[in-house]
Image (cartoon, rainbow, N blue to C red):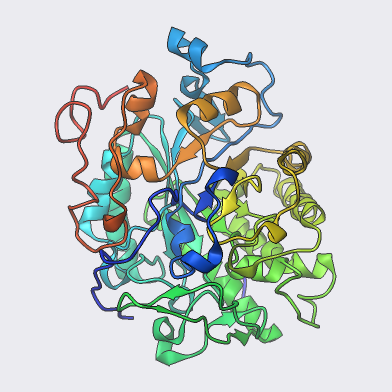
Length: 465
């Protein structure tokens, strides 16, 4: 044992979005699509949960047997995205993953029936799905109508959703999320200040989306007392147990993109003088304790971890991203060794993609330097390695064929194409997504009403691989 709200039903359809900006967990762009943070600051705050992320993972050891495959050879039936993959104890039939994406359909933080239909539509036999970021406690909220997994009622509703996904033969993990200082008093119990590793607020170049659809400035957070940190660790542990009770196959610890765990990891944020601040070892202590607690509760093979050492989303900058990434990897390797079992995966956001609103000053340098960082982390980590970035069908094929990726996860295109797996297999045209419906609370429009290749539901003739 580790001791350690209600929100208004708001329609965000009038929010302005740049149609070139691909959303998934930390809203990302290839370099040519870089947007000025001054022009687009209103949106960036919590939409990282709605970005398109592309998981690239590797087994232990990473597979080196797959020959390099071009998109043309993929048309000849050699598409590496459709080769089987064993992710720990989970046997996957293909490499295409549903990325975690906030959709704002969990009214009052309670999973709704519509979530079941949404995930069921996107599930395939042997496929891998990661849920939207899910709150671990009342203090973890920073965005309207995201689901939680810290109450009995939430667990019971999640059971229904997990059951329909399992009926399709898919694997599903729940992403555990605490936003830390990326919140506002309006989202916090009793209007308290958000908690963090620091009292420094997120800078004014970023804006938070409020429950009424307006955009505000991030407030000054409250730095957690040393004695309080064990309770947050316990919140992660308890939520992981709740996820397993709900039937999830595992969980992903969200330690990336400027949220709470990242606020402890990055020296550009963490200014603590206690045992959780200062040295690199101290800054890694919180994530280590969280992972250890969750592993002790549900087993290492059910736990994935996500980090982004080279991404400065929400001011999450670090003076030495490579050293930080390697320090985290070293600790995860030790946890695996001590538990005598591999973690499900390590998921690293690829720095060669610019986060929405991110400045070039927050980047490592050239794309070649950033690619070397990813390869270094992949080689150092002793287990399945997952990367994220702005992948097309062709880039996904290339990544897996070259051994840079074992799994590729897609976000926004999975929103508008519930049968994306089949479309990628057939190289079929994609439905255009409607960004105005990404974050509304309508349980159908822009959520479960996108057409399949044939038919209007998941039982259409092309929906089964």
